Every structure is written in C-alpha cells, then in structure tokens.
Length: 393
Image (cartoon, rainbow, N blue to C red):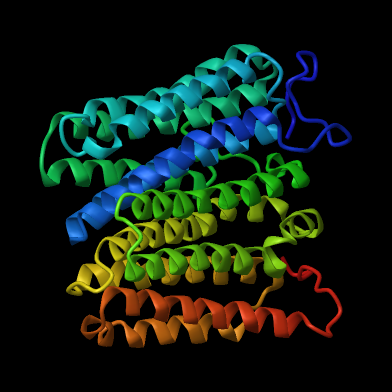
C-alpha cells in the first residue's frame, strides 16, 4: 500500500516484519475480554444469551482485526501509531469492563468505547498521512465507521430487543463495508492493489491471536476448576477442557495454519486472503469462546442434568471451529480434508442424542471427535512431501 514515506509510517517490504511487543501487549486485553465473553455465555445458555454473546464477540473481534490491519501497514513504534495502539488498548479494556452488563446498565460505555476506537483511529492517522490517495483511504474507513456509529449509539439508549437488533445492524454495516472494500461516495472503493501487506507480519498476527485466544479456554477452565474443588468428576472435566485446548491448537497449526504466510506470499491475489482472514478466524475464535463456555458449564455440573443449551455450547464450540478451519484450509489449498466434514457430520448427528448424556459425557464425545481429526491430520501428513499452498489462490 502506498503511504507517506516522508514521515516514515509505512512498513517497508525489506524492513522488520515481525510482530512487536506492543502488539502482543495489546492482545493481552483481548484474552481478558474473550474470557468475560465465555463466562457471560456460560451464565446464560439461552438463545438470547447466545445472540448477545455473539454480538459482543463480533464487536471485540472487529476492533482487533482492524487494528491488526493498521499495524500491518504502519510501524507501531512510530508516532502516531504508538499512541493510537495504546488508545485502542484502553478502549478495549473499557469494552471488556462493560461487557458483562453491556445489554444492561453498561451499554453506553461498551458502545461508546467501540465507536471512539474506530473513529479515533482515523482521526489519529489522517493528519499524519500525506498524499491524496492515503487520505482517501483513511476517509473511507472514517465514513463507514461514522455510519455504523449511529445504530451503535442509538442502541445504547434503547432497551430490550431493539438494542440487540440495532447493534447487529451496526456490525452488519462494519463487516459488509469491509467485504465490499469500503465503497464510499466520491471516494470509491479501496483499490485492489492497495491490499498489499507484509505477509510474514499479518500471518504471524493471526497465528498469535488464535494461540492467545486459546488462553481464554485455559483461563476459564483453570479458574472454574479452582473454584469448585478437586472432586473426581470435576477433575475429569478439567482434563477434558485442557485436552480440547491442545487439540484445537494442533488442528489449527497443522498444514494450513503453519502455511498462512506462504499462502499470502504466493497468492495471485494476496488481498483476497487478507480480506477473508478476519471472517474465517472469527469462526475459529468463536469456536474457542463457545468451547470455553462449555468447559465452564461442564466443570460446574459434570454429572448434572443436561439441557439443550449445554449440548449447544459443548458441541457448538468444535462445530464453529471446524467450520472456520475448513474454510481456512480451502483458501490455502483449494480443498478440504475429509476428516473435517466427517467430524462435523458426527457432531451434528450426535447432538440430539446427547440430551440423554451427562454433561461430562458430551464433553468426552467432543474431545474424541477432535482427537479423530488431529490423528487424521498426522496420518495424512506422514510419509508425504510437505504441502504447498495451491497456486489457484
């Protein structure tokens, strides 16, 4: 992407591409925010609770995703990127603090912080960028976040179902605008050539964030287990939760996850991978958040009564993760391993039967399915030459 070289903001192709400590510092806030999202979902396993948790998760994810794009294009140690990143961190902490009551008395704090982060980012950058095209680029972002700010802020002052619908509309605007390359009156869309990126940096950021997102599952599982004692059934649930974290990480990094950088570098349209990565990773991160909620619920009631909501979170986490992982694999290799589809079919077919099984039994079933996928990946890779990304991408 063309940026103002005079002020030294752009990330040079031959310069440092690794993620900075500041970016990792920023990610720590999101680990806490994801853990709070999982706990909110675990506390309300109804359809309403699931919808609210999804809205909050999508808001958090979009803050991280747009910030990752910004730090991919510009050097974080250079003003104004450094203070902008710190400001995003503080705003995210406000969102996290307001998250448990975001659909109640803390709505204005959550929505206000979200809007301030996105509009403030453009206001930070625009004065520092010189050149017509880069200012147009910042203007597109500012325009669309200004549009979505209306339902965000109006939703904060209404109550009940209206708030959820307005916030869902705001997120639809944000996500659809990015998917369409921010078509803006008088400015047009973001040109495809501007979707150049530092492949090593962006790939590393997504890999790091997914790994840190697994910290949500580990954190929630550990805290829940510590607060419920060390009874054998709860200990078994704790072990299953840990096993799921390991399996999700193993399945993610196997082949496609480890080759994301090479896929971006060798792609005929690297911008397409950059534009699609936020959506595929949203599914996978959502899978981790739901799995953490399921682990918390199972540790609390390993042999208790099973509800439809319990089945939904325990099996839904792996389902969401595998859906995102399958799409991710297709983007890199132009095909999907059969084990992904088999696992999804097994989980969907098993769901109605699981209502008759204690929560710990459901968690064990989910773990066995994930184990099958991980083992299939290892067997598929054994004795075969290393795979390369598909030239078609």
